[in-house]
Amino acid sequence: MTKSDIIFDLAAPISDSEALALHPMALAFIGDAVQSLYTRTRVTIGSNLKTGALHHEATEVVKAVSQAKEAQKLLPLFDEVEQDVFRRARNCKIQTSAKHADPAEYRRASGLEAVLGYLYLTGRKERLSEILSTCFEDCLEIKD
Image (tube, rainbow, N blue to C red; front, side, top):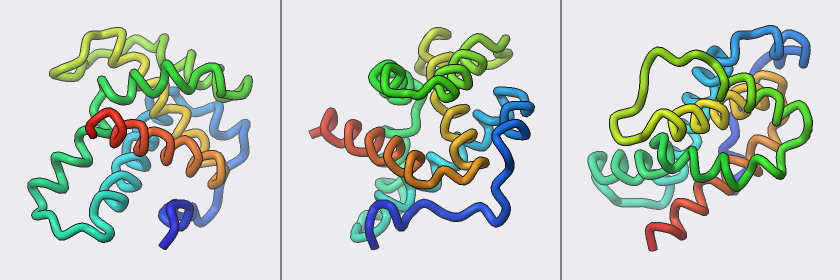
């Protein structure tokens, strides 16, 4: 199984206008799940780690601090629409925060998740795979 095979298909992608009409935090909600499933799949395949260790590995990638660092690196590479989705989510009034992230990190993490959600819902598998793979591999490099 290759990295791009891990991306799962949405039965019926929605249009750009439908995706952009969703609240940015709804996009982030989807993006969080997409990144979590992708990361859990990547750490599990070919591993004989116990579930607790798998969880720890996955958490290193999907925690807000890691997502915020990745968002900072990826933002200049986002196209105009991705940048807009990111900004809309980052600038949302967020009622909650992560345990180990400051509010600015949490907002950047939400922006990245919204972009992932947007790409998933609109069926842009290759772009989604590219971003998810970059996030995953960057976190592994930092850890080593």
